[in-house]
Length: 227
Image (cartoon, rainbow, N blue to C red; front, side):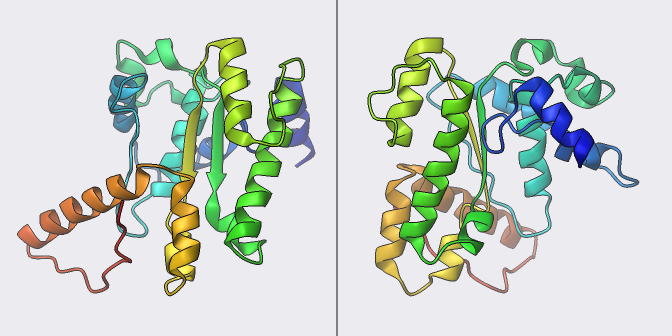
């Protein structure tokens, strides 16, 4: 843990903003690792386009969290992941180096925030404060219009750097599992993400149709999301 902290300080990495590549490094070095870097070829195609919002909706244990760690390691600034990805499929792609470690990247595990919060209001407030803390440490010289508003702060940083943020959210739907009957909490949570709920529902329906066409019936219907 001491070595990880030293490395974090050396690269000026945060906890949520540019958290580094050590999680993905552990996955790659594990006895069993499945190369899923082909997904990066797709995300590179849609980054900086109107199709840039990507929702990966797959059943549990399909490796979504590891994939989130992979994307964080690839896009996140303040670390060097070239060697980590060497030998993996994406390293053979023509634009591999173009996007490698080039973007300020925010990684959020919403289940982690939920486990430390009393309710959805507390969750959102905690998440905003922690990300803002990282942001102000990383960009102390930015003239923030409202240093307590996360979205405004991200816009201010973009205006200064002209580098778009990559935001990666794991366990996005945990609120809908934990607050199944609390529609008000769900609506408050969904407002933070704009169009994501509608994208999530379309992807879920597509996956359901694909599974059923192959003779697989979902045993438990996930909470229905509406735009």
